[in-house]
Image (cartoon, rainbow over all chains, first blue to last red; front, side, top):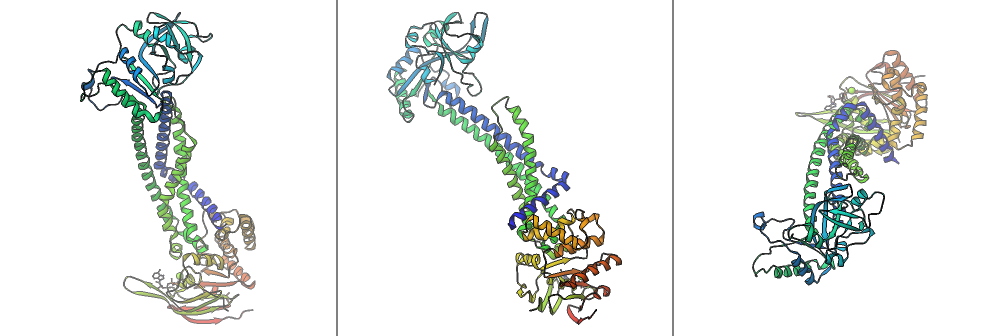
Length: 408
Length: 229
Ligand SMILES: Nc1ncnc2c1ncn2[C@@H]1O[C@H](COP(=O)(O)OP(=O)(O)O)[C@@H](O)[C@H]1O
Ligand SMILES: [Mg+2]
């Protein structure tokens, strides 16, 4: 009813006024444009990072403990920890025998090596020496064939399982099963192919790897006795703390640490990753929020300024409208709409600038300008307009009609 | 019951050093259908009077009853509603919105009255036709002559069928020929029963009215009815 017709009138007037002052309106929106560009780019980047992280993290699972000489994230100085003894295969076996909270375990050694098949070769391939439990601990899914068996691991048999990308590039037209690839002088028969699973934190592709019995890797692919890492998937996520304590006790015994001596090994877990990631995320979001609010603030001041000018220029018009029967609310609405419209324009320009940039970003990281982010950006710009326009609009609505009509 | 009843109206302006009394105890009644000219020299209080009559301003003391309602203590929003419903203004400087067409200018009072778009358009067209501007509805004020602009203003003033048509020096910015045309339009409106109050300092303009109220130093000096054929 009444308010709707005022609203329509407000939109109409605002549009007329924007068109009459094109250049001025465009310049005024600059701060808003910058603010919206930042907010959308930051939002897109954060969402992209999150998506990449969650995808990577889910590939490993949060219920797996990684026993190794060194912690992934540590505050201890490097010179205190550099002389730690490696964990050997026998130690790892002893640990696994005694760990009662484990649902599945694996002993792992990683290498980068060159893989060959006939005249094809791939260098820098991740060769993961593991045990039969590696399939469950790592949450691997097989597309073809089977995983390494306990007997093959015990016997150090020359077999392997290959990642999806490697299989596709070596055997585009035939099944890889039964084929023999050559790694560092050994011929390994392919017994299984993994499903595709994507990159880990955008770095090492898990699809470009070869899994071999850890015993095979240790016995003849690596000349010396290499340190290993033990992965233990707990039965129940709730028992993670108990499991960690148990492992700690077992490891101290295996490594013959006297009471009071500090641990010379570390039990790592996903949580550490997540914490670090969240810290980074918070910093990024904070920086983004700061830049955004700063530019929106500056933009808002600009809008407020220009709206004061507009109100002053149009004092006569305000007087006419009031004389004819416009109530305070109608005048207030009119100028609020005008301020909001300028800012909305700025928001749209900002989005038009940000969109192609997100397309470029998408080449380096998953970055998609989401509908909700677009909605937020537009909402934020309108809100900036309403807040910044309020004081000028309020002043306009309070004008005395007699004085306003006399203005020139 | 008179349409307008002013009782002992004072309007004072508080200046830095002194208080200026623009109106000093004015009492006046105007009946429905009257055509009244308010005259007086510059600074006598005509504009102050016109602002009060038009509900653009409220008196410092005294009461103003319009259509039986006391409007002397109303707030901004209530006055806006009264102006919208009861008063049609015609100003010396036309006071049309520069960027709006004649049609939109005339529609404006109805926008604030909440009239639907279709009805607005229809009534605005009718009002512009009544003042002889049916062929100028899409023109902006700067594409119209002074006389045409004042006709648009008259159409706008009348479109909400107000109780009073209030004109402040309506011919002040027009050449004498167009001024006569506007006054003829007023005569026509008065003969159809509209209540018209014209504030002017020109005797020529006052000659058209049937009652002349003269103001001097914020008081009514004389109030006489003119009988004309
Ligand atoms: N807003 C105002 N502030 C102070 N004095 C005013 C104001 N408006 C009018 N006056 C004074 O009131 C008196 C009457 O003014 P006005 O009503 O404008 O007379 P007129 O329209 O007859 O020339 C004048 O002395 C004028 O200076
Ligand atoms: Mg005056």
